[in-house]
Length: 212
Image (tube, rainbow, N blue to C red):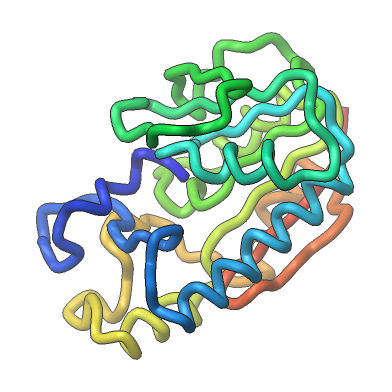
């Protein structure tokens, strides 16, 4: 998840922090842990459905999702690249088979159709130009693109329920876009033929085929 997200060590009530500072992977809250199991289950199911040998994750953040997919996917990719604007927050003890590259989602340093699957989770909501981001994901994919975003307005409602970001009506710092289920499908459909849509609370996860 992208370095658009700030470090989990920073206070999630700091108005100067840009990004989602809630540590979804490390939380001890049983409700949040159940939600994360649903999210990871949906992403892993679609990852397995893609059956990809060459994988790119865009906006990898600490690298925890890439590590999870490498360790728990039904097929071990021949190549797994994880990219982000900065890799300073990369976690330790990640699967050593993962290659890391610094790159912007708007200018990925790869040729057209370089990967069988491109994964981009929890990134599009941070972009000023999400449509351009999706177009670049589709460009470097030869077949499949897997994207996810928070489901709005449920995401903000749950933030308010846990007592966070009240002054911003529950909006997580750094979220520039707010995707309903339909809005994310419409965005993905601008570049992809939708294969599957999964709805683990409170996310939308989509697997699509490139149109080229």
